[in-house]
Length: 516
Image 1 (cartoon, rainbow, N blue to C red):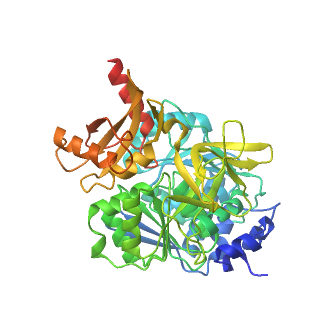
Image 2 (image 1 turned 180 degrees about the vertical axis):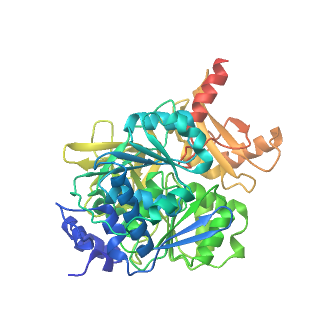
Image 3 (image 1 turned 90 degrees about the horizontal axis):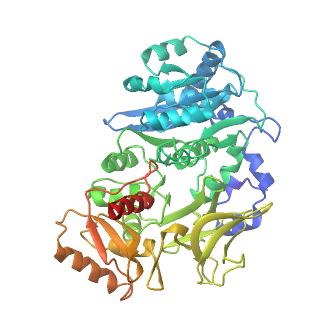
């Protein structure tokens, strides 16, 4: 029987997938397993593991052998420093040699790695450290001012001195963890006022995430993969780093402030064949106007985080020559819907989230828990052992079994009895040549209960003439009632740390404005 990595067709995925076959892709088993070994040590003969495109133009290339040795040195360092298995090691570092060495070295030693977003301020950092209680916190030298937020954690600066100390330690370490030992804490993106609970992953998670790799991003061992999302968040960490390395593929990342043209150049220079990015990244690639200056070898494209607008999807296909495939899921349940990048027998439908990944049952249910007929909007839910788990996303399914996103449950706008989708309105606005970004929310209205308010980022002056033009643009493309009755022209839209448009922040700010 072929391994799952040898199967690329959608029909084969449906016919030959068995969850037990995932274990054939790894050295470990249901009793003994270590993420660092699976991602690095067993692939030391494969060449390049990671390429980092730094914002200052530098390229950093690291082989599997180098990372296996440096992660072993870091594991030996933790043991020498008295860090015991199960204790937390927090890492607030950009992608770099020290980031990967410490991420995998902590797990190799049996400690729990806690990657943290590098743009957290002292309040955001203090809340998360107070929650996970690390023994050690690694900070970049330029963020030493955050040491005061470390609490009881010992602060170590990730500088040249630390590299010299690690270089003197042995480059071998025998990992000995159980599959169910804790490996990593991951915080979802949120505000410092509302601390998201850490999602706790065992070493077994590397097997679970391979489903997303095989069918959500389409990773195969010979891919040259790239994911510009920060490895502090789920997409960049699990789908962009852990999963491709575990399957023996090389991967790429970005360090420093995101620059869309820097990404385009990296895709060319690293000869990338598989790109997985957030919807926001693709919009920025489209808006930067530089895509035509580079050549590409991309054969698979995927996105996640939020729905993609049709203009950006068209841009991606025209630029890279392949369809942009959706990958949908949540931090709590993983990837549940996908468009199977690289599967020549799968039709990628515009606007669709795809179909369920193998081994997962997904449905759109109404308020009474009954399956919705094709076309009817309900809540997307996934079957778990103890019943249906709510994703808090609205959606519908068509007659051929494709799922579609109809917005977050709290993104639905009801005006004068009409139910409208913020996502649908935004999609039309983004088709206008002068709109760079758009977000729609519902705001209170004495007559209609709610009306749509759109926030627009544009290089054009936001005057009344432009506002009326946009209203007519939407009204003639959706319906006479479904358009933004209010518009605000802004310099930028609030984003979550993971890069999604933060409609909740817009609603909170609007409520405060109306109260004032």
